[in-house]
Each structure stands twice: as C-alpha cells, then as structure tokens.
Image (cartoon, rainbow, N blue to C red):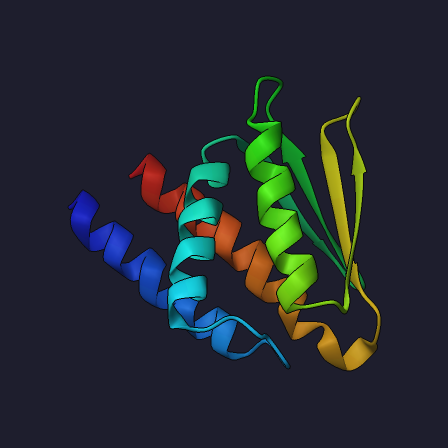
Amino acid sequence: MLAKSREKATSTFDAAVARIPACALDEGGVAAQRGRYARLSADVESVEREPEAIIVQFREDFDRGLLRETLAVERACCPFFAFDFDDHARRLRTTVSERDRSPALDAIAHALAVAREAAIE
C-alpha cells in the first residue's frame, strides 16, 4: 500500500511540476527536488493556500539545512519565486513575482501535501 501511495505522490508531483511555467529543472533535477520535498514533508505541520501565497508551517525540529537546499534549487530554477522564512515561527511564506506564475505555488503546496499524505498512509 505504501509503495502505491508513493507512486501516486510521485506522479502527482511530476504533473504539478509540468504546470510550472519556465521551470529550468531537467528530469534528474525534478527527481532530486521531488526527493527533497518528500523528506521535508515529514516535518510539515500544515500547508495553507492563500490567494497569492502558500504558507508552510514546520515542526520544531525540522531539517533547516534541507529547507535551505530546497529553496536554493527553487531560486535557481524558478527565479520568479519569493521566499520569506520566519525562523522563529518556523513558517515559510512563498509568493510569485507575477500572477500568471501562480500555478507554481499550487505545485509546491501540492508537492508538500501529497508527499506528506503518502508518508502518513
């Protein structure tokens, strides 16, 4: 059952990434980023979608190094993202520079939520 859930999460993540306008990751890069999101999702308490942003709340002892690495990859491949991380509150707010790039927000929110759901099942 877990393998089937992970397979579903992987294909859903790939579909979400395909909707991101101007993502510069190649297939290997997408797979590596998917893995980072899957590992991060274990430390996500909540993912909230606002009209112009996503808010991710992390657990107290989450892997900050992994978050930094994941965000660095996103900044390099999708420079239209803006990340505001409040370390004290463990809250990440992500926005995009232009409204037509909002599907990218859905992809990140979906990647964290779907990977987290697969890990729970």
